[in-house]
Image (cartoon, rainbow, N blue to C red):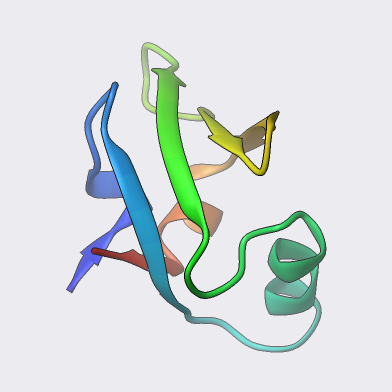
Length: 73
């Protein structure tokens, strides 16, 4: 299982599954991170937190903990 946190800068990946429960999972889905969506890794901060991605035509910053919950292919 590869997660969004493990992806490299410049990679374009597809979301396979969202892990997590409750409000955290709902928040990720509300931001447009749903099964089958394409995500491009734009930038990663020097210490790895946050990660900037492009999803559905807009830029989104995610914490490492949130990126760990997103399974990709």
